Figure 1 (cartoon, helix red, strand yellow):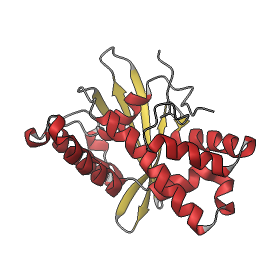
Figure 2 (figure 1 turned 60 degrees about the horizontal axis):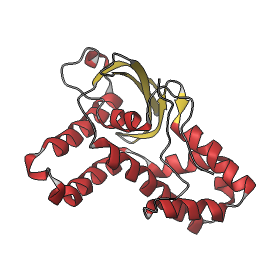
Figure 3 (figure 1 turned 90 degrees about the vertical axis):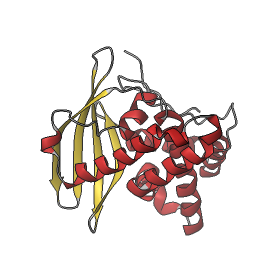
Figure 4 (figure 1 turned 135 degrees about the vertical axis):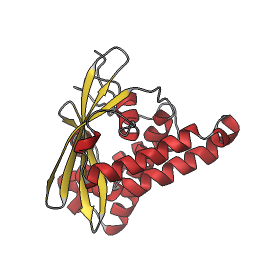
Length: 221
């Protein structure tokens, strides 16, 4: 079984790019930003700084550049929470060791897709629309305008721990990344086993070309 991100009006590459570049300077809508948006913007500014740093460009700097990108991502994304939500009801069935293993694999899987695609950013326009907060949860709604003038709504869901806001889900045109993974993970476990899911994730993380777990894809308009 292959994991796909169906029902969304843009390529997964666009989703990952948007995740990293929601802070275009001078774009209308920044005035609506609240604490969660401010923190996301800070992370994105750092990502853009890494991508545009002349000292980190070129194939010889790939390893160093990607290491810096991964570290920046880890500081803003709550991969533990994403993993728990993606496993859904099967999370409670996992031992502490299995949970730790799964979080590591899911983190590596998402980071691999993230870093591979963020370097493809070509200056798409991003607009901030609104931030809504309910207690320790916040949603930052944005919109990407492609070079073909297509408008794609993107929402970032964050949870606050102390003064830090961490991303635990991304929603593209109403479709949740975490829910999408949860549906597919659940099907693999039901039709095969948790161990088979782990093997597929390990294969993808290790870069096997024929590994069945693909970064979620979306339909092209």
